[in-house]
Length: 169
Image 1 (cartoon, helix red, strand yellow):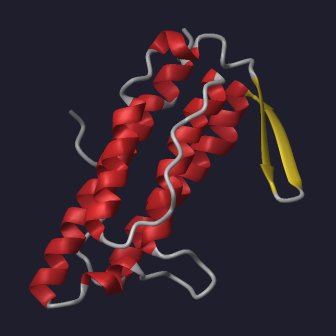
Image 2: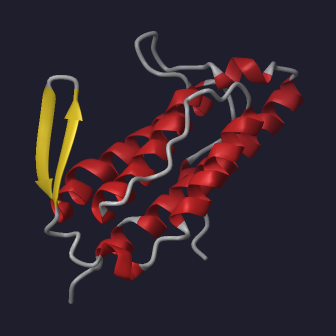
């Protein structure tokens, strides 16, 4: 029995984005309780050369929507990376989820063999669609979800594994 490209992508991304929204809720509550400016959490990072929380969420959004765009051959919506507060991050998450909810299983039929090329500066990688999802898109997506979780944990927000895993309903 095979697993569809749809099942490997859109629902997984939606779930991860909902996890991020829950992490932001906990971060906001923590900031209010501890009287910490939300900007401190918004701009927090694990190391000086790593992206801050806000950018981690932007990368999760971009990875999920651009993966679907590459797999379907239809351009994904583009969102500028200009969020300045938690409300705008939540709005970006909501817009990304709304886009992903428009994707139907039939939109991804045959995408397992579609050639996907990803370019970063001088680096370029070409994958079959299934390898792209399994070896690049999902690891990249979860790297940024994990890093957002870890930034908040490092800042004292009471988040743990169950918050990362999210509800199973």
